[in-house]
Length: 114
Length: 115
Image (cartoon, rainbow over all chains, first blue to last red; front, side, top):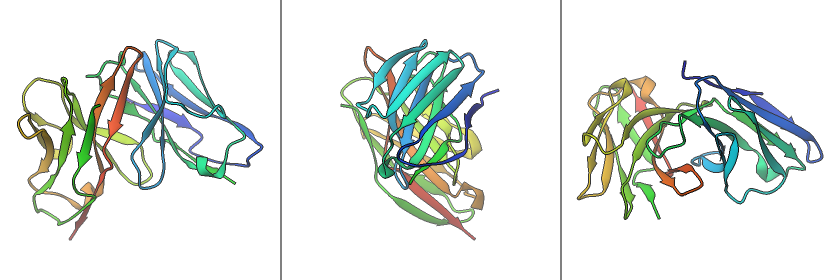
């Protein structure tokens, strides 16, 4: 099973709301990632967790807060977002986080901020 | 810094014709390269990857790519495309430091297959 699941598939929120995106994998992978993809653009890395520890934070605004409760789960907590944060948010996982590892992507959560 | 450049933003092609999607990389150190496909409203799926083994890499769905060090290229090819190959294709390189590994994507190539 090479599946990464993400919930919800779609999310509409106001600028004062607090919401969370969830990602789950059961492949025994030890590295998990959040990417942001704007329309007609490539994905851009936001965060990397390696062995449940945050290893890369690509200067993402604090209104995005990642959390890795265990090796299978990755959350992205959202608070006070701006309309320009509307995008497809992709989660991915890989075996060990090595350069040669394949990253497996979920289907994404399409976020709209009003 | 490592990066990839996809030379064509759009490639229109007729069904059953061959196709080549071009990707060039820049790196001063060992490089690992990937091709991903993204169908509309979906996540990304790995087509193939180069990790310092054979220079001709075969992937899923009949795609293959050749790593060319002298030309710093990793072009994706398919001898005969189908309508279902219509999608966005991303070339990517992994960038690693002591903290972790990140995929750095090219800008993407839209492959449009028509009958």
